[in-house]
Image 1: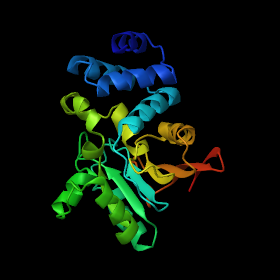
Image 2: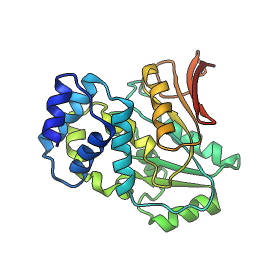
Image 3: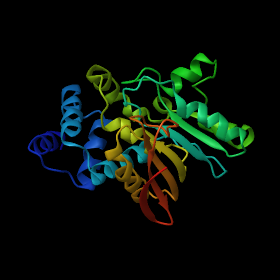
Length: 246
């Protein structure tokens, strides 16, 4: 399937949700070569991923993820990275502020792939363990108010894509998938995206994935809310998506 998908995307065509899911399953099951994975990611990056392609790939990742069985209604603060701004990992710091305000946070994240500092890099530097089992992570969220869900530990099937991603060294489909594949199944989140063109699109992706409430944001060239100018917001609420500036 991945060979046909590469050819179609290179020619400017799109994949259905089911086709995208099938390609992602092929990658996760180790049936695609490193060269095929890299070619697929670059082809999608150059043409631009569609809502259907993102939803299909995300559903495949969610199905194979190790579940973190939290018993509270938690949120996630996560960004795509890849904005090239060179900032520190703001979403991780924000997660502690949110938890301190009394809102449980199941923070999903990874090491840096295409940016200066990933959430896992920051937390590891602070001495926080990244290798806790799912049940312990759930207790962290429920009892302490925050837990860090290390993507490679909970998305083990994605090990086949790590090499090609690092060798490519640019943002890819996985920058967009990471924030929408939280293993705790959070239904509410704030998601920063690297481009204003992705704001409404990613809000629609979250809607199709069953998210109840979300803010997708981009401000001042960053996958963050900015204090230096307007921030574009895609708000998912009551099953609808609207965009506005703050």
